[in-house]
Image (cartoon, rainbow, N blue to C red):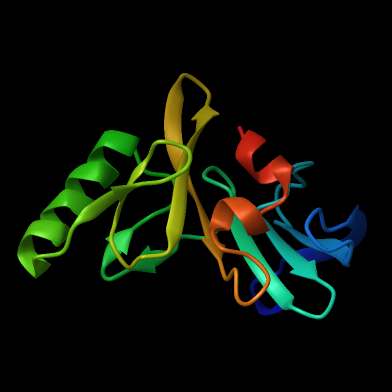
Length: 147
């Protein structure tokens, strides 16, 4: 992120709810213009390391998975691309805890946020590892209120 000009801030966000381990967040901000909102948030849990990465739909870098652009998209267009991918590769779609549809095996949570009069997509990448069962178990509550 530093090579792309992003600056970082680290914050202790308390104890992780399931084990009481220390949890912290590293936020990355775009250099120009100076936004007050982070473009990327990385979450860590003591003893487990990096557990989640949240990429903002308006400010975050573009991320693709299996050739599908995930960030800053109109939600219905992203869903069409994911459905097409699922059909071409004969895999299923599943509903996330937030009610979004994703391709089986992607391990990505998608959401939408306002961008002026439009809505664009954000993405959360999680690694629950040995300490949690799902992204909903490992991600801090603030992730699910990302607008």
